[in-house]
Image (tube, rainbow, N blue to C red; front, side, top):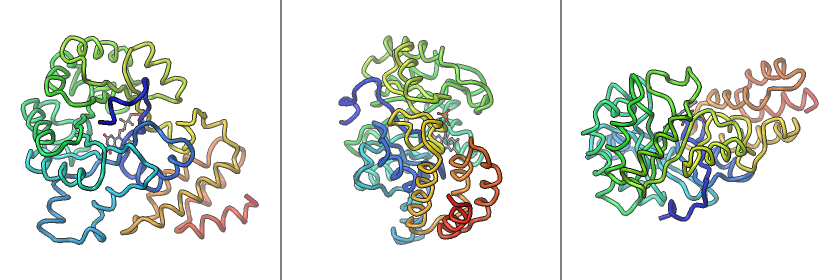
Length: 321
Ligand SMILES: Cc1cc2nc3c(=O)[nH]c(=O)nc-3n(C[C@H](O)[C@H](O)[C@H](O)COP(=O)(O)O)c2cc1C
């Protein structure tokens, strides 16, 4: 089990829908890999429905596409969501067969469509079901199971919520240090990580704790890990436009030319994804890479018009970049 072999504090790249897809993970892997990769969230029910009911071939199935990874993205954890234990079992077996090193259960996502199914952050309000889901994942494969969640739903309820998960002995728990209600609108509360570490010590010292929220750099992550005694740090948004982050670089450390080369490589990776994803998804990355230098806004506006990698390269050449 890879979790136990990680040197502390370890760094994980956060799951981010339509951001940390294969194209971006491959870019990051070449520039400085995190200690743990995560896929974007994937619907366990969707996997079952498209494969077993609709019989869509794996090559044409967008959900199976989101479960592909390359050889240099290890260890990699697949994040799934559902409110049905049988769907969690189905998807866990599948990701074990596909060669993932771990399966992560999403219990923190505030997306309305996911919460409506009783999954994601809704599970914070339904601890009995959360327990069933963890058990379902643990029973069907030898894969280590982890959970990513928040510190509470309407308000912080770590004293009640965290022991429920700890008692199920997952390999690791990632705590996004905000409540569901807070979304990402207030600063992450790292004081709560200390509290979580105390609860873990009391309830189940074997479970690894990963802190998440607003970490801007490896140096900041190391400071927070020392201060709170958590085992690992997960970084999400700070990796936007900075695939060097896990090599210790801040966004400003990288010269513009190198950033634009990385953006083109990302677009090339993106176009290799099959079945294809809409090119507009890449625009989040364009915004993040093309920022912080004089003329950035004008160039960004032009690049936002691009519809292919060829277009993107043409615009960069025309601007002598
Ligand atoms: C665009 C975007 C997509 C996200 N998708 C997911 C997801 O698929 N699964 C998940 O557990 N969290 C998801 N998150 C939440 C992040 O994993 C992370 O918890 C959050 O961004 C806080 O960390 P950060 O401040 O380092 O970004 C997403 C966040 C963003 C901004």
